[in-house]
Length: 452
Image (spheres, one colour):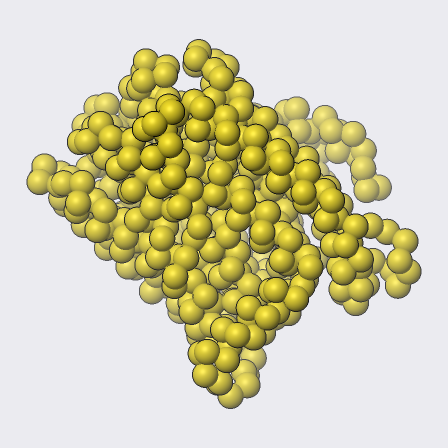
């Protein structure tokens, strides 16, 4: 399904110029083997299939939750507060979760987190379908999901390396993960918009709960080799300190995470305010919200697919700069628009830039991090991308209540552009620090002649 959909939706991607020694011109079988090469690994293929089904349900729940909160309260602030509650546990728990992910069996951890997420969705469905749900119960349940995600996200990111069979396919697997998320983001909101209008939000939650069974089944079907023996455990405090020191002292890791934090704080909250744009700015309803979310997902999917076609991690620093700039410009365009076609185009551009920025950052981090610190670094990645986002969501809701949603989004886009200029200035230092690591991994020859 993904393959056919990608061919249908993204013919323009197939017309990019020839780069890196191969020509990106046709829909040839060789091109698709390049795009989908990580799927040759049985465990990753199982994960991809199960997670694709589950994520469609997850996006349905995200749209249904936002719409339900706004329908019950008509409050931009409570929209922001709901997003805040769903993500704030990651900020406080992710550093500790990263320590445990480096110690625990990551495969078993994912099975547990998926089962708990399924139960949370069924609880939302039961309350919504019996029409007794209140905004406070929604806040409590999304807070529970945030706690689960604090462990699920670093475990999932760290487990990718164990699922692939060839280390050189790591970047492709990360890009395919992003494609999977955004393929679901394309389908889920559109389905949710129809279901909400027809039968209400509760059925979105119910379908989400059922969809978790697919990824749980795929995880249980995997054949995972026993993890290598690990050193004797030290105190959690010592491991926390070691992880923080490692992140702080690495210029590439530090710069990538700082920039991702900025974008998460000022750019990503645009999704929280989408119900306001759908209902107030554009004069639509649940269908309009579904179209906006789907357009953002379409752009993000295009960005992820284009990254999956890359053969190497080389040049991802520049990709981060221009992708984040595109994200900022898309946000400004969305904030200025008052007509649906232009708004759809703007959020598609924003989604494209945001996804290439996020996936490129993830690929660089996963490539250069030491294996025994992978869980802790990916926990900081989770904090940067989602853990601090609650403050951005809360601030966006409060600012939108004062100056309006459009100016809130425009300001966020301008700050993303400023961040891109800062990161561009850091690139020379980042390249100098990464070059020896890439040479040790065989990504670069042992001469300082090729940029990161």
